[in-house]
Image 1 (cartoon, rainbow, N blue to C red):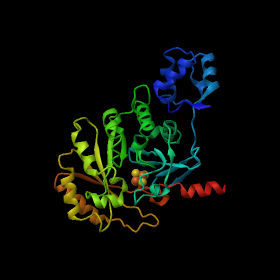
Image 2: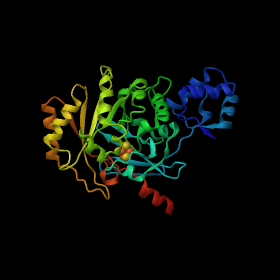
Image 3: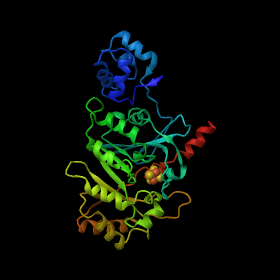
Image 4: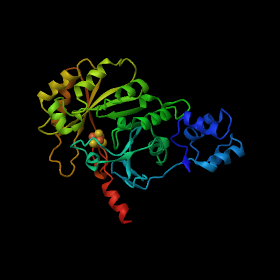
Length: 343
Ligand code: SF4
């Protein structure tokens, strides 16, 4: 059975055409899927009974419930979803005051091999389909409470552009979930192959993983610097008209004694000069076999204050879910995979 969840309006149109259903049926199905969130085709009551059974003979809605969950003392919940590749993926729910953010995975593992990241160490085990991406949003119990979505889970989203594009369409299109793109952020290492496509075809917010303003140092942290130098990423971003209302953020993990001094702050100011953006400082969460340490709060505050005093809006992101390995850079299904295999 093929899942309907994750299908765009064009794909639904192809399905209804093939089945000989009326032209308007695709829009009706999209509404049942993405607005009314039905769990069975039989609930699509404005389709004729014959059309419902014809649809149900080949398709299913396609909800896949999480296979595991870990709850942090701070309210963060790390969900685990099975994939056909046999390697689970992780999705993190982050409730905070009036906001509830979902951190979504876009790939099973990741090819980018960032030195400080558990997902990178796991290697790449496949792309997620738009169905598997959208399912992460719909299948968690807190789905209806979500206010923000961030593509900052496992994987490099722009390395899975075709499926990401479909998922972003479903999330923001009037025929889909009809969310404002301002509530959705896609985080990338600066994947230049599809960054121009993202800038042109989506209005969602953009976050770039920066972590060092110096090419050689960034390359040691992020091997992808060799293929996609940050100077080229910035040059591209500077050609874009940022008067649209989307946000541009640079993510900067602050490592003790590595990238947290005045010299780095000044280089950051030079690099980002002229770009209407903000910087998000992130504490490093220790992972096995990586000797790097996080800067302490005092050093991070001094770094932030220097950037702010020189006109660059800078914030320190609160760490969430560290006790359940759900914090930034800690996502890896290894433990659960082992447990799952034993069960
Ligand atoms: S930080 Fe992001 S891009 Fe780098 S390895 Fe981890 S998941 Fe991949």
